Image 1 (cartoon, rainbow, N blue to C red):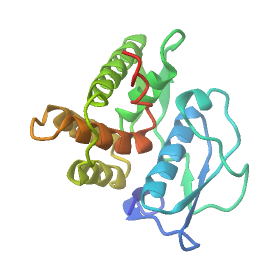
Image 2 (cartoon, rainbow, N blue to C red):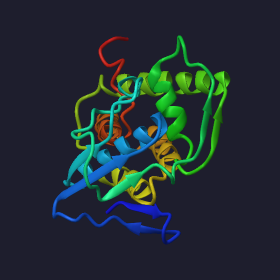
Image 3 (cartoon, rainbow, N blue to C red):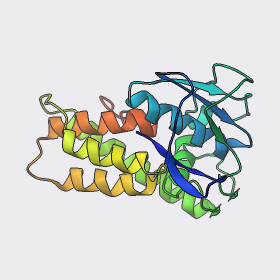
Image 4 (tube, rainbow, N blue to C red):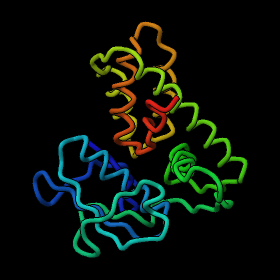
Length: 206
């Protein structure tokens, strides 16, 4: 189960929903906080919990693949805001908006970050490279996903949303010659359901 840092106790503890099977996630702040809230919802949904987002719309959130909240206000089990690091970011005009999401997920959510135009361009290049890999794997016969790689990625996410540790897992998956391309495809898609980077964006288009 997902464990998050609690500023009141200065510990990383397992979240404890007030209602069985339902996690209510509230966000306060800007785009980075909403991205973290969206990620919490995606991780808890992976664990077969109903995840309810509670926040007001912020311009540009949908461009980062942040799904709309179900509620604008209300009581919550998880509060996102004060634990999220400060973020300074150059203009992303002309770049794939999800390059911003990738750049932020490549840094831990509690760390302060300064993203230059070069950082965002590098993230866009990396995103395109991953989409090309996934599109290539899609050309092979379908196979069952790798529970080992998915489990490792989810374990990192469960540990206080350690998103930076997920990408080395995907890189090892890509380089693992013992894993069939069809398995790599299904595994990457499963992980991307949480990351929200649209890694299938080039499937059937190359």
